[in-house]
Length: 80
Image (cartoon, rainbow, N blue to C red; front, side):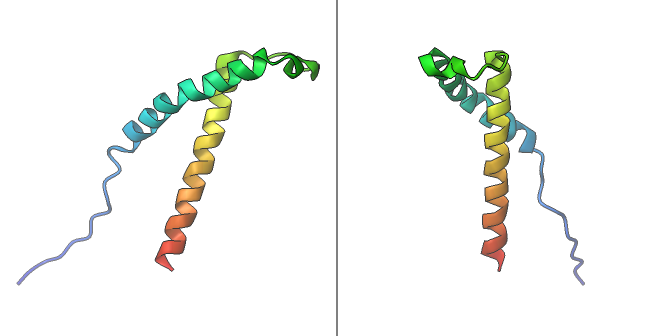
């Protein structure tokens, strides 16, 4: 007689993968924010300037959320 059990896939490394992705992409987004601020036409919008680090974190979190949504969509289409 054999018994079978279902165990969901482990999500143990999920936090590490997210922080690794964040750490790898942060310098790229920081460089993009600094380059954008160095351009002469970027300061003409009249809004108060944000900190470069805050702007980088905001843009990076938006990009990661879009990437995760795209991955979830692709996985759901692959199951169909």
